[in-house]
Length: 219
Ligand SMILES: [Zn+2]
Image 1 (cartoon, rainbow, N blue to C red):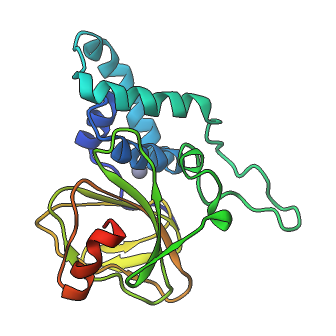
Image 2 (tube, helix red, strand yellow; image 1 turned 135 degrees about the vertical axis):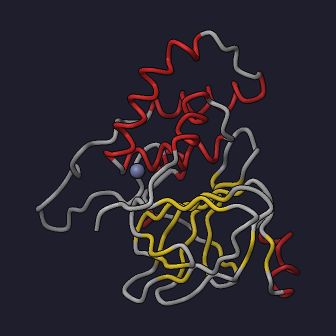
Image 3 (cartoon, helix red, strand yellow; image 1 turned 135 degrees about the horizontal axis):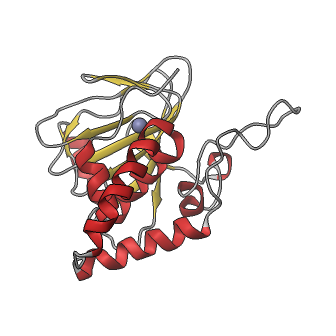
């Protein structure tokens, strides 16, 4: 299936300007690694915006996180247009593209998942701490607890698929939600859904049991 949920122009601009929190920039960079269409749009933005941006002094607090992401991206191998290994017995393309794989430290098969209500999670360390980035593994056919948002939430599907009020999201699709959206993503029946979820403030869960455990879970 091809990607149908892409990045908006303003997010691409913020990414180019380096004003996004590191976690959100990681989600954008990972979508760009998977999505040739947005890569093309982003290249145009960088090309036309580059001259303008040179005249703007970036804010000091965002500069550090952007430099940190830039360094990691520069160190990471470039995303390849085709899977590195294909056709050979047992060979398969990695589920986590760069720069995400370097942040996680491995591909998904080596992740030490931690239990949370309705799903498993792996917290990804970022240097600026302005947003929390995590990998979520939602069991096939299961929902994650219904919630709204206090700030922006980006969810990028890496494997499997989920559906919510905004449609169905498969590998590469990215959903950007805010306080106006209450949603309950449900993984499709065929496979577990693994996604990168980035939030800038704790989620607001409907269930008091989940709320009780929020401080422990860091969600
Ligand atoms: Zn795209």
